[in-house]
Length: 225
Image (cartoon, rainbow, N blue to C red; front, side):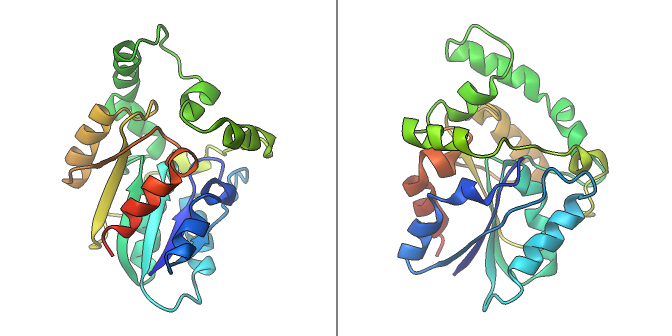
């Protein structure tokens, strides 16, 4: 099986650096794609162009994996190239006619996050990028992430309505972290059910599963093979 791995906001292929060798060790092929997140001229269709170019020589159907914001791109790719399945990991879940930038308000993400913070004993309402993304990432990996170039993400991919008329006719799975502080599990279950008609598969850890729990994530990616 060939896995194409699409990162979230910031567009860094490095995000998958703990996952790629584990997939390859299993006998799969893994292609981690970097996206031009800091390019204000690049929209979701541009991102999909780049992913499709990266897999142009792939010798077989793909498993297209989209992390967080990468889930906006994965179905566009799946509509264009032979795809066996789509796997979304802690995803933003797009819907036809809605600009991704509108989705958090439309789905009540902020209120769900505040409720979750209260549930786990955090006495604050605002998201802390470092603490809440990396709370379960090993210290050495977190330190390495902090040494990476600071990620920048253009607003362009969020501004226009999501470009598909509906979800492609491709088997789709959604993996949701049990401790995700950006998209709390209860919120994610509701949104995925409403928008895709699917139940989530719960995986351990927070939002950055490829950094915090790569073994568990790879096991789940391979579980349908």
